[in-house]
Amino acid sequence: MGMRDAPLIEARGVTVRFGKVTALDRLDLNAPPGEVLAILGPNGAGKTTFVRTVATLQRPDGGELRVRGHDVVRDPVAVRRDIGLAGQFAAVEPTMSGRENLEMTARLFGHGRPAAQRAAAAVIEQLGLGEVADRRSAGYSGGQRRRLDLGASLVGAPRLLLLDEPTTGLDPAGRREVWDAVRGLAAAGTDILLTTHYLDEADELADHVVVIDHGHAVASGTIGDLKASVGRDVIEAVMADPARLDEAGQVLGRVTSHSPRLDRGSRRATAPAAGGADQLAAVIRGLDDAGIGVDEIGLRRPTLDEVFLALTGDHAEPATSTAHVTNGGSR
Amino acid sequence: MTTEAVTYPARPALPAGITRPAAPPRAARASLEVARRALRKYYRTPGLWAMGVVQSVLFLFTFRYVFGGYISGGASRYADFFVPGYVATIVLFTGGGIAVAVAEDRTGGFTGRLLSLPLPRLSIVAGRAAADFLTNGWSILVTAAFGFLFGFRLGGTVTDGLAAFGLCLVYGLVFTVVFMVLGLIAPNSQAAQGMSMIAFVFAFISSTYVPAATMPGWLQPFAKYQPITPMVDAVRSLIIGSTSDLGLALAWSALLLVIFTPLAVLGYRRG
View (cartoon, rainbow over the protein chains, first blue to last red):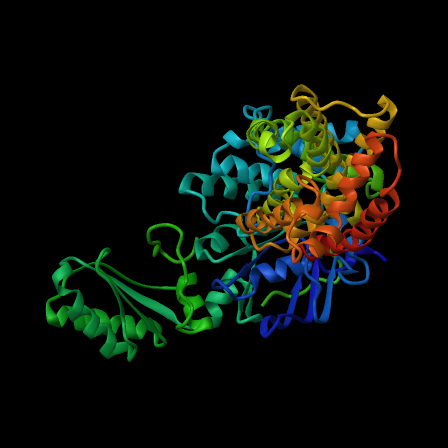
């Protein structure tokens, strides 16, 4: 089979059950190669189960799942040769140095000793681990350990890298390190599937996003597609005087017929505006009539947070990894 | 939504220097690599091997010099009775470490990483067992050495003694696979540690420390017919050159291996 022509991941009705709990519920998903795909969803949505199923660690109870044309049930070894998995926990051996960890994994991919050494050296170089490579990984920072774990998944030259919540539990500096590493790998041509419940992470790294909730895909597309699919722009106003935020919210609510979101910290009122520029003009007039001064007002596309809420409903608590990001919307 | 292309461009190879292995690793090499990692973890963690030694010495010391005098009246003969039994069952005391290590590998993601790699599944169990075979050998050797230091003497030839040592290694392998299964079914490493305590029941209610016949009648059936008693008796008789009990001991060893090895392989498959 010409694997180059096969989609990266093809899921048709994939179902995984744990007793009475259905973790994946007839999931359909199609990932073309050449992209960073993010699986986005709240905790418990089935993200990790999906990655484990793709990685052949979990057998599907139903449906069909192919990775680069290889069926995960019928030909798991072919799948394992094509993937590199970095799970939620950095699976590195703390009593071994970074280099020893990488060489071990390379040999378990099937490399002989010289090739394993070359692969380890190349990964150390690529991920900037040169300074710590020969120290025991027990002493690594969280970001270094994750990068090493990422590196261990690379030594077999996988066609597809699977990253399950690659930055969970990292501090902002560590997160930044891992993001840079992932971006570097994507730029060098690795296909990547990552899961995250951080919206900004998907926004930062992914070309394509699949939102899953309760075990099935509720939306799929580029980040732009997703924002557009929710269909409404958002009017956002930043108050000059925080004391008048509630009044401004009332104006916004009256014009747009949607309850506005108020963020006192940033003196910001937002509401979806189906009417676009006309409604914006109406809001500006309304604020002006009431004598409420604004520092900034405008129409923007919804953030991924807002899209996420619209897609998964109110039960899903989206997480934002940085303090609060509500910038222009598009990055 | 994105449009799907019919053909996709070839992706450039990535990081220079990394090649794609021509084939998955063979079982022997993969087992060796799994074993090497487990051994490195063991000897680079002094707490693991040093505590085993300290525990053995304390135990031998206590039974030889604290309980020994009262148990047999003449302490020296008691050393000849209980040291072979203790050496034969030492892995029942150190094996908790195996269960904990196996459970930690699973909860810490290492087992998941191994299962995502193209190595033969059996290599995961084989590598682990090979590593533990060696660390058990170390425990048995150290314990036996202290046993000699504390007054144990061979009743037969050196060859008989070596045969007994070899039999202890076989038991070590059997217990390893059992503890591996405990580690695989335990939800976490603390639970694995706790579940390993069950081994104490088998170790103490056996002929290891006192003859089963001295126990109360209701306890004797368990003490006599559980596997540890014939296993310990076989080591004791080998030391004086007798092969009585050997058949039963080997039969128990084989039975336990036949039951627990597939369970271990299946347990790892579960991930």
